Length: 247
Ligand SMILES: NC(=O)c1ccc[n+]([C@@H]2O[C@H](COP(=O)([O-])OP(=O)(O)OC[C@H]3O[C@@H](n4cnc5c(N)ncnc54)[C@H](OP(=O)(O)O)[C@@H]3O)[C@@H](O)[C@H]2O)c1
Image (tube, rainbow, N blue to C red; front, side, top):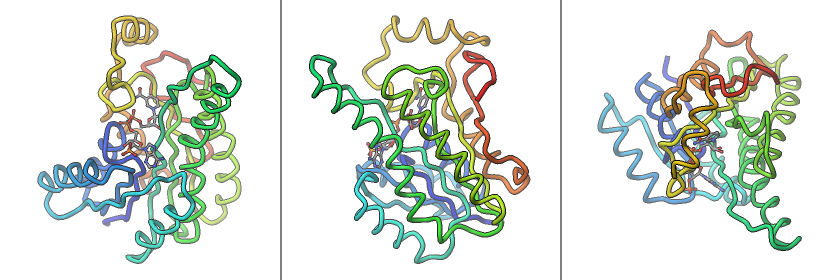
């Protein structure tokens, strides 16, 4: 059965792989991001490789409540949402020279990684399928072991998701986290892939390689599947064994 799926940050990187995977499975997908031209290009690329017009897009900055409200109204005008993938996020490039710099970096990371997920989820919550709705948030290995404001922001997603899972379980909605390790083929790492960055990250894995967006998408698809209904309030780590399983 075709599901209705929303993927924030679905125009690039991991979100693009997630959106492609759902579209290939025959689902209807809305991708959201700030850059309309990126969304349009990605939606066209996916649609050209599948059987029908499976992917549409909404351009919005998901830290802006008014924009989130507008996007949620557009998405839900077609009916309930079955799967919400809160994937939008990134790391701030703020300096550490002054307290004002530090404040700006922490606020940017919490806005980008936490607020984007919280606002979109709150806006779509009344429209999630009951039972059967699925919420997935994209954390990071940094949310389990740090460091800094990015790690703390991802970790905040875990506590929030545990609360959602608790509140929504009796309605048949699951809420889980995927925490990827090093996945270089993404906007996240664009312009930052020096050997000093790559080598220690690959070396820290047990499988001695980087991950791919498709491998993360596979984990998301499991947590979104109808047969995953007994899995909720969990953190699924996809990191090549760089951090061994713990919450
Ligand atoms: N790549 C890795 O190694 C890695 C590891 C662990 C976790 N992650 C997490 O995986 C997720 C996806 O990142 P990625 O690696 O695939 O990098 P990416 O290609 O940069 O993807 C991030 C996406 O989020 C969107 N986005 C960011 N801020 C937004 C906002 N305020 N409103 C709407 N959309 C926004 C971006 O689109 P626009 O710029 O057009 O808005 C972009 O499409 C992120 O949450 C990241 O923290 C990545």
